[in-house]
Length: 574
Image 1: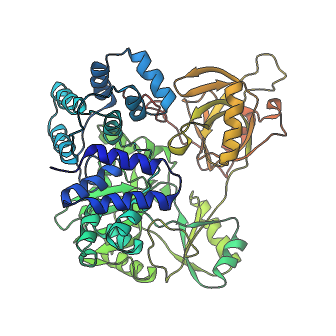
Image 2 (image 1 turned 90 degrees about the horizontal axis):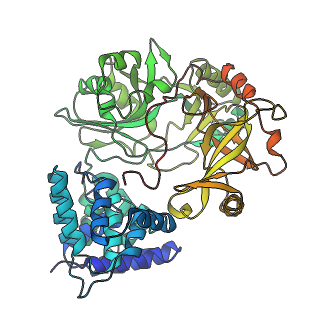
Image 3 (image 1 turned 45 degrees about the horizontal axis):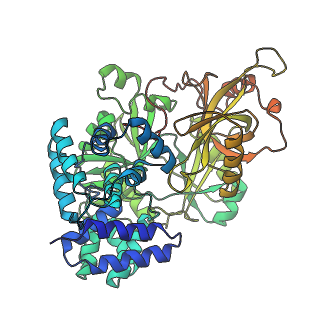
């Protein structure tokens, strides 16, 4: 008999019950070591990540919230309102299901392999009624409430146990006497942490070979506030200077047979949105993995980012959409080519290999980045100015000797960009967050005055939403305050009295029919809470319009579409 699903839930509950990473690691490591069969080990690691299938497979359950909702309500025999209310109280559907689930008689007999078999069936079947029948049979076998809770968590990919990928990787290392570095290196090569666990058990980590078509973490750059600070950081050494592009950071995977996948920083696949890019990439020989940026681009000029947004999420890309919203992939790194992993080689060598690969095959949809050498504040400032004149965000400075370190920041790569002036905005709504912030109001919608607030009829008009820049202590303080001044609650959003002023920084301002102001702040961040300011002292819409028109705002003429959905909410798909 396979490993018990109920035991899996107990182990993950135990890991979730502590905030200490080492304790989580020890709990999971002991459990993984106890699993006898390789298949159970694979599934336990896979499910612990909130995945129904391995990371490198393209299989999906194709089970939406509405299907799960119908099945759960048919079993629980409760009113939808009671279910939704419990979801709000618990912060997510899985915990709500566990709270409402009746404990049945008998011992739990559901195994990890039972789940895997049902998930395979769900992926293979398109008929909704048949999907519901498979799900119902699976849920009915959940004798314990925690089994039902974790079944929902895995289906929705929302574990909320606090077990990050690094903790799970460390647990695998502890289970089988391997170093975390060896585990992470192997994961970089093969992609699936569940496969890494099996290789670790059998002492085969060193024999792993790199596989394409699994997204790897991107190397990141450390922010610098000024050219002088950047020059001090590099200490007189010569660095590559590349324009910091305003687009979608992307990695392109191509096989020798012409299969192509493009992944973003969030590990989403976006190649269906960019057929022109894939057509150009397919013309290059061999197999490879390139790092770069997709930007809206025409006749040597970078266009406003909104042109990219008009491609994303569309089921059909018409010739007109492609023509009016041209895009290009600008490659700046080559990480793998024809069986050779290049990440451990210096950047200067990777640049040479990229030039050899692309050569004269640059097209309107495929370019390579331009590079200059800088070593002083004056040179950095000059390169920065040229980048901004080309409608780019700023500079990325890279050590020519740097290896490619996925997911890491350091002194090897630096970034320098100028932000627009900050704005004082009034909070109009506060929303419960996600993960560790699911019980706190941590996402804030903010507004400016449409005219002088002393004038009759003056009102606040929204210009954006932000969640980064405040500490946990400040979030706790704001949560307590916003709950006291809440005017109404819609789902997990509280409309609040306009009393709190936030200083907001952003990268660009764009036209947006989705906001009552007509504008949207792009990449907004909270600089500080202005406890010293009253709501009447917040900025006016005229200042937003003024900065929108300024030469520093490269979002000008960019348009945030009114169609489509906003940010995810608690009841999406239910």
